[in-house]
Image 1 (cartoon, one colour):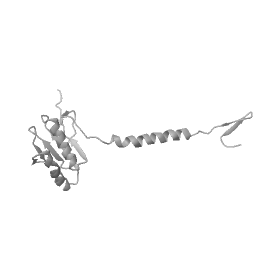
Image 2: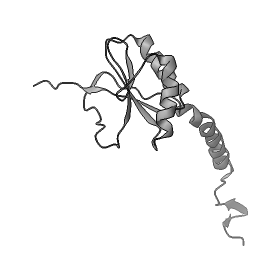
Image 3: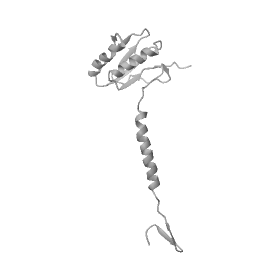
Image 4: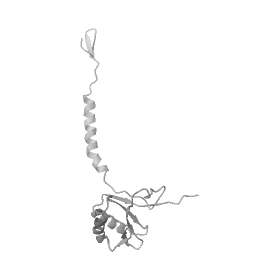
Length: 142
């Protein structure tokens, strides 16, 4: 008599599990995850101008901050940049001397959205892979 077989009055039953359907389902799920995973990684980190419990930049080593003032002036750290078109070459030069290729964008809430998008595009054109938005923590109601 074979292992896993039991004979009951002339009939035999197989008591082993058939894993073929399980393997088929797992392969389909694997293909689905392989196709959808790259799509989930794209995007831009965006924080609102005021948020509860805003993350602090204090724990990081000297972050590179690009600022857009209320009147539209752009600066990298304390260095003024005349236009968004001139921002990419300035950033390339600054980032070539730094180990971290991470940039934070801080914009006044009165700056038009189009100006912020122009600055973001210039930052991405400079080859920055990680762009973070700086937000101010909202005042808590007492």
